[in-house]
Image 1 (cartoon, rainbow, N blue to C red):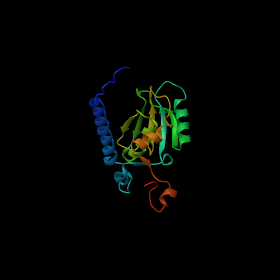
Image 2: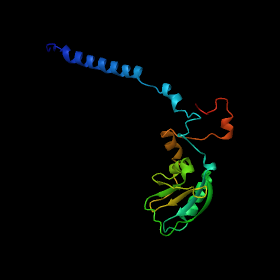
Image 3: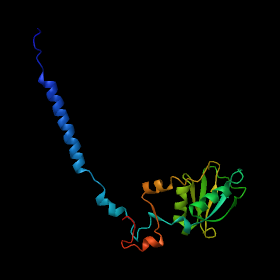
Image 4: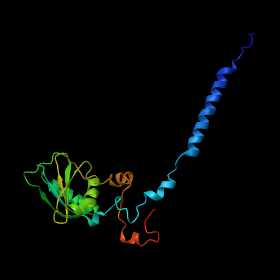
Length: 182
């Protein structure tokens, strides 16, 4: 028979202490984390803070222009925007002297900043171009060479990530709390 091996208690003790410290650290973080409940009320839009509330597509008039050589681009984009709910006020070709190299230009007047901000979610990467005067009470989207399609599927997620919501509908404003979900 072989003689019994003597076990060393030090490695087991070190492992036990390390696991205890790790468990303590995890529980400390769980108990002291911010669960977001305290800040949840501040993220809800208030009637005075309209920076995080954009208009609904049905209240935004938009004109779609094609600054590329691709035929039918403005028409198909206008159709997509109509299906999403925008009021499309027309489509056509942009001025031949205008060449948009990027995805698109969203041109808007001083009273259309929120309309343009909403359209920017549908055209990610588009350049916002403020104008000195409102272009006939509509926002103008000029499609560029890098434009492929309207980003309708990702709008809601990107708006939620940016803590932006749409203005309530008339039925939502009749709710007792005054704001849905807050």
